[in-house]
Image (cartoon, rainbow, N blue to C red):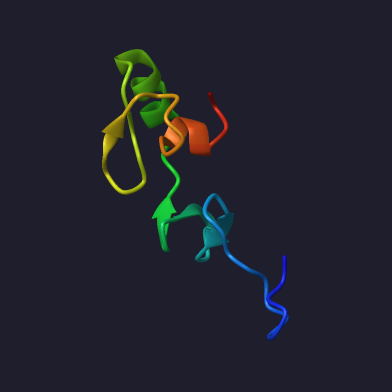
Length: 74
């Protein structure tokens, strides 16, 4: 989607983009860019039965704000 006035792309929650020379992935969530968690972190959340959100809350793995849901893993 594009801004009708400027023609620039709109950024929405859930957008992912690479940053820096190493192209590190970040996810846009509630107005801020957050580093995408590692595979090991996602595995830990799966085994723990609880998951973190980009803003640091602990929620159920299938909560709409959990990293596992935002990354499309549940």
